[in-house]
Length: 299
Image (cartoon, rainbow, N blue to C red):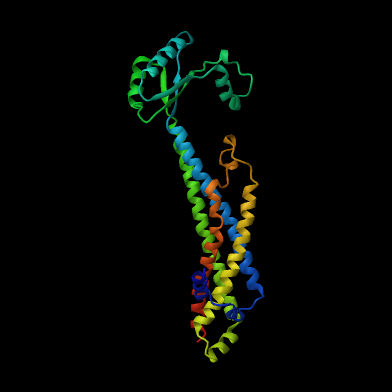
């Protein structure tokens, strides 16, 4: 503990050096409010990245082995083809489950698009068989056998609409990480501007300190300490507020997709304390860089 405290004092300076930096003024509120706002946004960007990542993985896992076989045949042949298909599927390696959808299930699938009370007995609807396969399933071989023995059957592994969904979720996850990078860059820019303003406002004090023998490293540590602590404090408030807002969002619901699953699960909540630490590190680097440049221009 003492070693860590000594390291922090060496990096951030001591409290006596804080008198070099004005304790009040617009730079205080600019730093704290900017850090709080950026941390609040970072919580949601991080939650979006994690939620879309979980969604992409869930879609990929649940749909990778799911398929639908559609039988389009005259009504007098449909039952015979369904029976033949069930025989083929029961003897096919890699088929974990095959289930014929009932008429009520087909009605439920069509109701959102065509409305309730559909006259299914007058509509030439195909017969649908829901298939769950394993990694051992030879899809191409199954398609060839269906084409030869059940001409009206079409095997659909949902690739046409599965891939765009997974790609969209992956892109949303990437956008979330890009947003986090932009937030960090914006925070660094605002901290740099605030540090430069504080350095310029205290130019005379810095000149006097130099006259009495103070080294530039002393002044730099003073500014670095003050702005790092301000940023970490503001980011802690912002991250806490963002975490509370996330906690009150609706719980995950399959019908709502990621919109009701936007949040943190389990160990994901441990990422929130890292936001103030990361913000403090950004402030530390940005302030040191700004201070070095500003003091070089005071010559």
